[in-house]
Amino acid sequence: MKSKILLNIILFFITALAIAIAAAYASEPLSVMGHPTSTGTAPKRLALSTVTDVKDSVLTVNIHNTEHAMTIDDKTRFTRDGKPAVLSDIKTGMRVRITFVERSGRKIATAVDIRSDAKPEGIEPRPASPASSNKTVPALHR
Image (cartoon, rainbow, N blue to C red; front, top):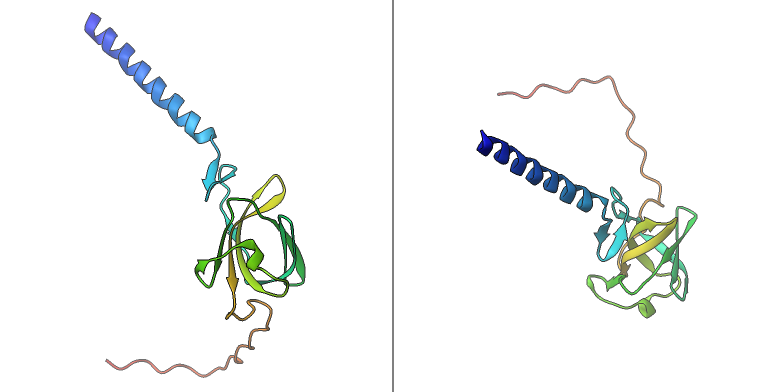
């Protein structure tokens, strides 16, 4: 009888410890490339955009006639056509693709890819879809 009580007490403490550890890890912020984010926040990516300004630690880009200010910090990774780059490589008018996280109402760039060969995305109108017709599609022969 005493062994069952002791076993139940041990199981209780092990379960309580497991719950406490799970709760501690759940409350810690996530990290995206070294940038802490709030729980459940995923990094976002802007479509290909045009650089309109580069000042200090802020990269401003324009996409769909909307300005987006991206904060740059020491953890932001820069690439140019897939090769390592630096912030000073970015000039006004260049095309970039930015991955960022939102923290405290600011957009923090985690990765900036400078593109030299890409066409603007989402800016050119899509071709109109062909008009639907009442013709039936013939069945496939077996």
